[in-house]
Length: 533
Image (cartoon, rainbow, N blue to C red; front, side, top):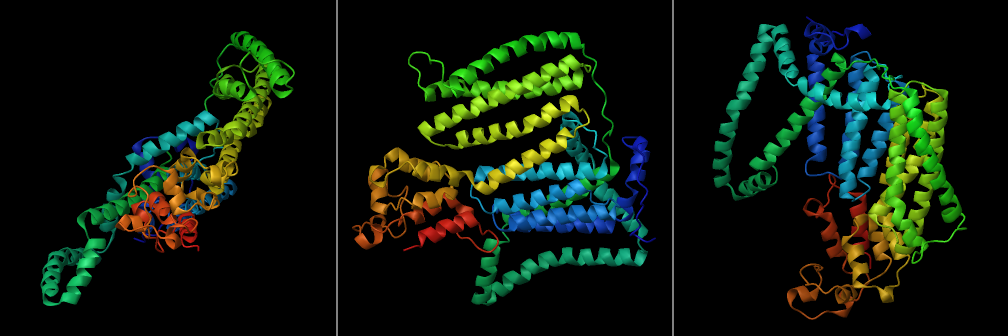
């Protein structure tokens, strides 16, 4: 039987989520093309292990993302699923995210990039195999979670499909494959024995083998690499099976059973309070016509109510979406929800204005920058929420996905540590740098802030004079004090001579020695500054 059989008939919606017999019929294209999908999944697992083994932020990260995108495209085409127009946006965003990962040394941001790629991959798979045009936000979020859970259910399928594949082969080919695998297994103990004997016979050969064993063949290393290969293989194969089996129900149930009158009474009272509050914001904060309470400055006034405003604005968006989902349609209700969206816009503007006042007094930090980023993103999402009130068929999830993706890409490519570093340095004077300033610049930021830190041109002696801690905590290799000698002017008086210690502090053990595989552009910038005369 030809193993590369492709069943091109797409299942009807009525077939989705049915009994195992229907599921097996849906999975026939994957089972009959086992060699293709197994090879594709194995290639993905090998690339995953090669690119990301002890290398979360190297230059191979975009290569891994590109391989994942290519595997997704090849799988869809083999299953006769043309790539939809919106899917190219998801693939392009994933590639930009992969490139942005090796441009930054923000390790927390790099970890969140991995989660973002998983979510983009789930949305890509669901969008390719389902008609999701009418799905709402809740339906999509629940579908992503169920999609991952159903993918775990497919773990036995690779073994079942392999068993069926071997049965379809000729007996001679099966015997040859079994003999080949048996030969590999028997060769393993023989290789250990002969390698040990030859190592004792030649010192040069022994040194080569010893280096290979120490770097690659240690049991923990071998197990870790093998686990990554297996994880990549099963993840790709099971996700493909989950897409083809289509266990999710595509229809969106109408849950608008709530009484509009109760919602009107509830929202009416809230809208009245919001209107008074927004009027005060416009008069006192934006126009600065009113008087502040005694003892308050505008920065302290801004700091006091910021987080409360942020919470209320986010709660308003959730409340509007819940009303649209569970309350029967009413024109008066739509008017009230629109007024609440308008009040939310004023609250977001007030929150942004308050945060800008606070930043102008106390400078940027990671938290303040992330909060500003989140506020602006909410402000862009708000018109979509207001539009769906009057146009229920508006694709709010796609709009929100595009906005969040673009904003997140902007965050990754802007490198928050660099933005914060330059903002902080712009308010500093080299002659008046304090201990808290240097500690924040060195330890409070990532390596992305290196150009801003280097612009101060602090010498090694100046850094150690400001920071009252031991020489071993932050000592450069060329520091004579580390070897018990006297400080030399030409070694320690040079600006940024301490950047070797700065690099060690931020690179970590995995990036102390960067090569082709783990090259990171942000850390390379630190090395360039470190070696600059």
